[in-house]
Structure formats: C-alpha cells, structure tokens
Image (tube, rainbow, N blue to C red; front, side):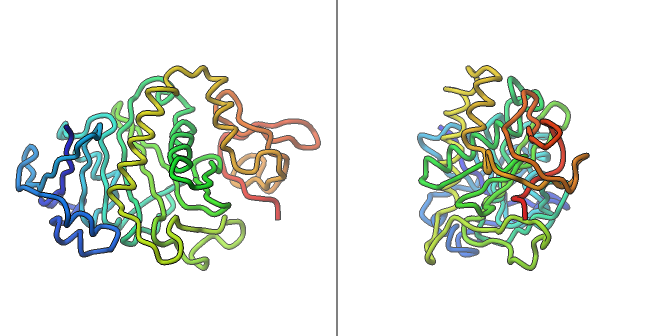
Length: 296
C-alpha cells in the first residue's frame, strides 16, 4: 500500500503551505482530491495530509506553488523521503525549467512532476533521457494519444509539443522533471518564433482531465514497462524501440545549437550513444547537442 501526501508545511524558498481543499478548488483538474479521505500526519519533520493509494506501486507527494518540482524532490531526497519511482506533483511552478535552463511556463491545470529514477542500467549512462522519452511516449500511447519523441527530450502529440523531460543527477540520485500540458499550453507569442514547434495540450473540447489520476496511470505504465521490458533490452533493442517512436524519422530537419548549426539533413535514427544520426550531402553525421525542427 502506498500513499498520496499533500505537503502542508512550507519548505522555505521552495514551496508554500497548502491543503487538499485549497488544491481541489484551484483548478477543475484537481477537484478529485475532494473525493479522497485525508488525515493529518507527519512525514519526518513535515506536516502533511495523507490518503492511501490502493493498487499503486509508489508514493506521490503533492505541493502547492513551488519554485520547481525538481527542487521539492531534492529537498525530500535530502530527508530520505523519496524512494525510486516516488514522485512530486506541483500545482504550479515559479521557476520551472526545461532544456538549456529555459523557463517552463507553469500555470495551474497541467502536470508539473518530478520522478525519482533508478540509477542503474540505461539510466546510469547517456541513454537515460531517451529511455525516459520512450517510457512516457509509450504510456501516452496506451491512453490513446499519438505521442512521439522529438529528440532530445520533447514529447509531441499530433505534431504539437505537449511536454518535455529534463533529467538531473545530484549526488548519485537521478530525477526526471516532467511537464505535460493537460489543460493549457503557452500562447504562440511566448514561443521562439523562428523555429519552435507549435504547442498543444491533451484536453480537447473543454474537457477536464483529473491530474492525479492521469499521473498515476502514466507512472504505473512507465514503472511496469521499465521493469518488464526495458531492463531486459540490449542497447540495439532500445535504440530500435526508440526509433519507432521518433518524430520526423526519414524527413529533412533543420539543426539548431550544435556544431552543425543552421544546416539541414535527413533524420536517419539514433546512434548507439544516444546521438541523432543525420545524413547530409557529405555523409552521415551524429549530433549530441542542440535540437531540431522541420526544415522551413
């Protein structure tokens, strides 16, 4: 039996105080918290509200406004309160961050999560980000979404960016920061106008998705898929599996922010060390930094 905790105590400079009632009224996506039974408790030296998560394999810690869920994860890890596959969910972030430390727009209603990962196998090498992308894309596909991985760490659904992944390793602890647009996405004017992928969200036609339940479903599938499949993969099998989910495979793409900046080529797949294979007129190259967009 595992537990959902709502962090009531403030973590100085990281989180504000909150309660399940305050979260449930902050956005319709959190309203299902009002249906759960909560009891006051303590977690180490922190005051929390707790509710059981039957048939779930890990703990979930929910906080109100925070600097970022990665910061909350680090604070709980320092208290030995976050085990592998435990996660953080935040109502909103003041300082959410994405690739290259870019700010991540974080209003209420979306998933802002941090997930502690095992520091073993593929997660212990340069393929960890691709494994995380593969697991998340596969979990979204199980929910019926046309999800694809945009190298190196974005998730597209129906050719629009709905999420991103950022892996951080500190002191031998690996955590994935995961943002998913459930109910809203950044306006076009806030995106990089020259080559940004259009943003989208998972909700259609004014529907409401229950944030906690969606996150539970995603974590449950990712955890199962990792233990049942990925730990048995060879590098070749992993690369093959990632390539099946890779956006724009076989298409001409434009390269940004690498030694091949402002050049184009055909996207051929993933190298054995997680780089992107690009075929150009003078042969195939592999890039390990930067990002790509469809050729304008």
